[in-house]
Image 1 (cartoon, helix red, strand yellow):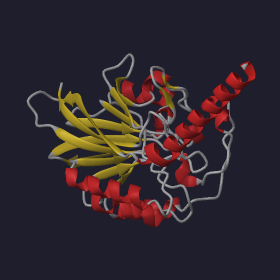
Image 2: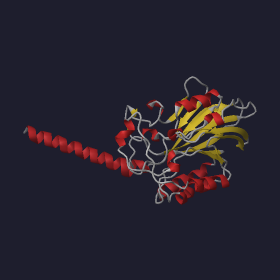
Image 3: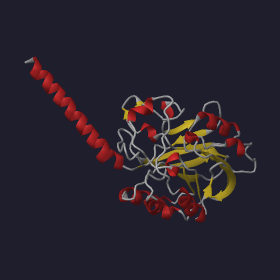
Image 4: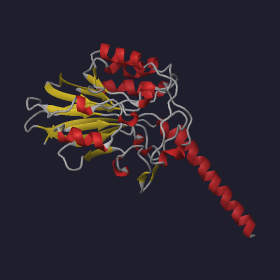
Length: 297
């Protein structure tokens, strides 16, 4: 009798596990979600400004549903589009990325790259993400220069270790960004310096939200910090949240809007729209894009 009970318990556990995996891989990873946040970073008595934040598309050529959903976001008519990297997951991904972004390219935009814009994915044991000093493994080189040329050719600003100002929504915005800190391509000192008092708004970008970089951006007075990379944890435990961020960011800040500690800056971390192709699952963490409505302080 006891053996039969244990067998039934094991069979039930296996069935629940299989159902959860099927849901995470077939259902939730395609449940594209639009999140909305109000962020109080503008001067008093000014009109709101809307920023569409996209990240971590990890696009494969045949992901038509994702491409169509991202393209449909142009109907939101944001004042500014910001993309924080990891656009590609295949050497043949550029056409798919462009099908997704094409309707948005007529709008003011800015971007930084992530590690998966430079090199493609390789198989890895998901449990290695829990290792504190996990070695980064590079795959095949991706056509990042082709993607860069298309984005900048459309007028979007390349903020990989760069700084500039631009007009969007009738406001002068000061922008700075770094190349991906996750693979040590960042060079914030090359663009560091206090935010200009003549700017109406200041925004800083990084793919991986490494605290050492965010601290410097906040210290220079950037009001809004935007990043991706974490996938929000990708697999979250209800009541616990993200188990890992794959960077130095605390797990409690793995996604969403937070006040950056010790500063007046706000940080928004996108949980992103894709997954690593060798781990195509999401649980309690649907793929997302975000509309940040910037409002007066």
